[in-house]
Structure formats: structure tokens, C-alpha cells
Amino acid sequence: MYQNLAVLAALLVLYANLAGALESKPINGPLLFLLAGLVAGPAGLGVLNLSLDRHDLRLLAELTLAIVLFSDAAQADLAQLRLHRSLPLRLLTIGLPLTLVAGWLAAWLMFPRMPWLEMALLSTILAPTDAALGKAVVSNPLVPANVRESLNVESGLNDGICVPVLLLLLALLMESRSTMPFALAGYFLLEELGIGVLTGAVLALVVGGLLRLSQRRCLQMDSWQQLVMPALALLSFASAQAMGGSGFIAAFCAGVLTGYLFNRETQPLLKTGESCGEALSLLTWVVFGAYVAPKASQILSPSVWFYALLSLSLVRMVPVWVSLAGSELAAESRLFIGWFGPRGLASIVFAVLVLDAPLQEGSTIIATTIACVVLSVILHGISAAPGARRLGRRARK
Image 1 (cartoon, rainbow, N blue to C red):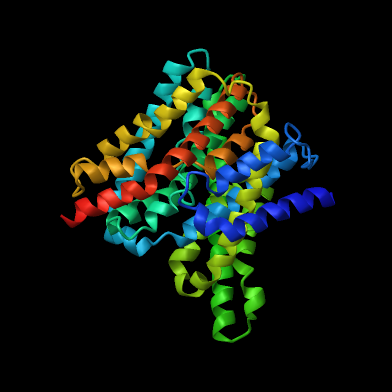
Image 2 (image 1 turned 135 degrees about the vertical axis):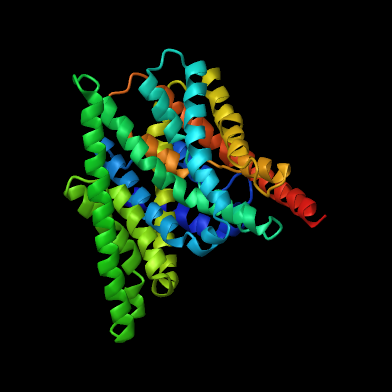
């Protein structure tokens, strides 16, 4: 136990001191922790032996995604969204559905033996973009503000939008032997969505109101108040799950409502939740590298890597180009937004969540997810700074 703790703590200390230098490099935090998990885990040196089963992996993935969904939603700048609403709304309401369809078609071409529901599942796993991996672009002042905000809002919200799609596909897979799978899956989805939305909204209003009252009456202590946001994320998630709803939807809705209604009170407190989410995210990358990645027996298949390249390029770029057609953006800006859709934590967590599903091509789905994320971390890391500089020069002309 202490050896495992020492390895994980050493990785966190190392990254905490090198994060600024690594964020914009090809070998950044997520890839470093994934590789560290592979090297230190049972398939490598064997110095990291956490004795985790699938239930433990699932719990870690669920808690990580709940906090990340909450933090991303709470920090989404809805004022900027209203100001430049046409661009992120186009990306989320047109580009994302087209990306899901394009991903399914690419899977149909590359994996003809894969059942159609699993093709759709693979497309959904790889559709969300990663806000953390896109920081090198969205924080770069050379990139025009409308492009930065569009990418930021999209990456902050598209994982939450993909959650109900993932739940629906999993419900269909679980009920595939039923005589009325679509009816049962639809009822299941409505139940999960309804309970999740209601739970998240109620808890956000209650906790936000309590926070506002506490600040008005000077009842709070700064050291304890920093825990309110991550605790609300976990409270929303766990309450909805306990009542038979979707904890992810609850955490996402609680984050959106909290950020919108209580922005002044919560904005200084979101850093702690973001830090908790990042620490859990890096731990998830390590565990994924140590225990999930070695089981991807299809990782050397050429079709896996070709699909990963398609997912990062045409499967995303064409839908984004179509969704932004007729906007004020120039062609190069549309290509820039289409290319900078890095895949990361959401895809990893979604892959862990489907480990227990009765999948015929589960190994292929896991291998393709790993290939896509690794390629994304490297390719987007290499091209972030040069792409931002080029776009900035074009915008100034």
C-alpha cells in the first residue's frame, strides 16, 4: 500500500512542478501519466500494484467524470456564449450530431464485423473534446477571442451532452435480447435524465442559496468554503445515482445552474474543484495505463490506428466545417476549430464505463480509444503553438 502511495505521490509532485513546461509540449501530463501507468504497472516494472477490480476502476472513473463535468459546466462563460452564441451553438447542435454520425460511418467502414450499436458506442466515446488538453490553444491570446471561446465552450459542454447518448446506447445493449429494446431503453433514458436533471437543479439551488446566505451573514470560513464546490459535485452525483437517475447528468446540470445563478459567489471557489478534478484525472490516466491499456489486444491492428486518425481529422473536421458554414469565420479559422478537438479524459472515462457492458468487440473499442487519445495528445501538442501563431498572423492582416 505504501509503495503504491509513494509512486502516485511522486508522480503528482513531479507533474505539479513541471506542469507549466509540459502543457504545451507533445509529452504533456496526460500522456506522461498514461505512460507512467504502463511502465510502473503490472505489465511493466510491477512497482504499482493497486489491486483494483472493475468496480474500483468504474468508481474512480465515475467520480472523476462527475467532478470534471461539474467544473467544466460551472466555468462555462454563458455571458460570452450569449455574445458569440451562434458559433458554439452551431458546434454543439449541428457539429456534434454530425460527428457522431460520421464516427459511426467510419466504424462501419473500418470494423465491418462490429455490431452497429457498438459502432455507435465507439463514435460516442471519441466524440467529446478535452478542455484540459486544449488549454494551449484556448489560453493563447494570439488566437481570436471568438475562436477561443467557441472551443472552450464546446469542450466544456460536449462531454455532458454525450452522456445521455452513451446511456441510451448502453441501455440498448443491455436490453438487446428483449422483445421491446427501444421502448425499454427509452423509458430507462427518460428516467435517468429526469431524475438527474431534477436532482442537480434542486441541489444547486439549495447549496447556492446556502452559500449566498453564508457569505451575506459572514458565517463561512475560507478554508472550509473551498470544499463546497467539489462536495456539491459529489453530492449531486451520488444522490441521483442512489435514486436511480444519472449522476453525470445531475453533476452537469448542477454545474450549469450554479455557474449561471451564483457566478459571483462561486467563481473564487471553483479552483479547488478544478484542482480536485485534475488530480483525479491524472490518477485515472495512471490507472488506465496500468490496468486497462495492457488488455487492449487489438492495439497493433492497422485499422485501429487508421480509425483513430480518421476520428481526429475527417470525422471531426468535416462536421465542424459544415456546422460553421455561413458564419463570419474565415476558412482558416473553421479548419483551425475543426482540427483542435483533442480527445482525452472524457473518452478514457467513457471507455472504462463500458468495460462491464456485453460487448462483442470490446477490445477493439478500448484499443481504438487508446490509439486516438495518444495520437491526439502528441499531434495536438505539436501543432498547438505553431497553429495559434499562424492563425494570429492571419487575423491581424
